Length: 249
Image 1 (cartoon, rainbow, N blue to C red):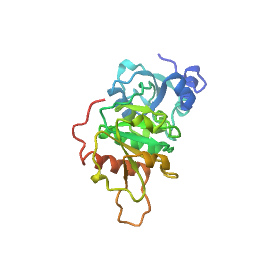
Image 2 (tube, rainbow, N blue to C red):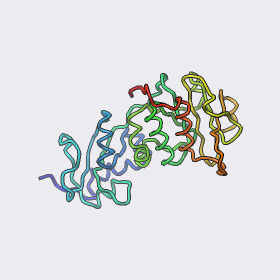
Image 3 (cartoon, rainbow, N blue to C red):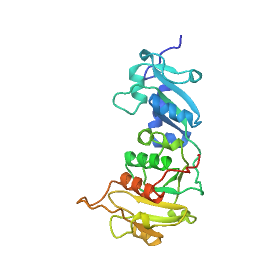
Image 4 (cartoon, helix red, strand yellow):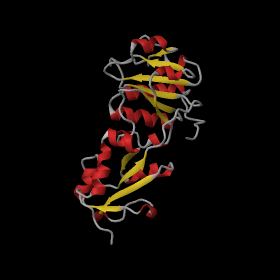
């Protein structure tokens, strides 16, 4: 019978270190938690290195070929990023980052909240857009961001860019709180929608260089929208209000 690993077991300690950004970048690995999310990630063809499942919960809902490593509750808590983990938790290879120049592109310009970042990636994947992020953005491969993105990181191309000058092949659209045009008035293909952090917005230099400034009309009294919500509305509008003809990853 497979031995049950504790939270001090070397294999558990090594996997738990993937909660650190430096470890993820150095090893090209991350953690995926939960049966539904893991199943979706596996369906994309992602390479699963190890799977940890709690010994007392019965067989995990994963393919038998993955051969789960049994752990106790303290070990699972160390591996998981949630307060009440139920497992399984898997070590998964991070896909090679790339820009797909045939797609529209959603760009995080310093969006630092993992929840917003993940939701933006999920939106990009849902509409067949690619996703790019600049320095200062949350790590798209952090376990918390992957949960927020429902694994969208594995479903659409993701790439880090040094500056928005790398987006010369796209028609750039800067999301601004006011004085921009309605997104339905913007044309140009492919487009790159730039979303800034809620606290600071987009730098003036980016606004000057953008082909368009976009403001989502909001007749209510709220001053501005959450970054992820603005991204979702913008992507929908710039897609022509349709998710049809979405390319494969």
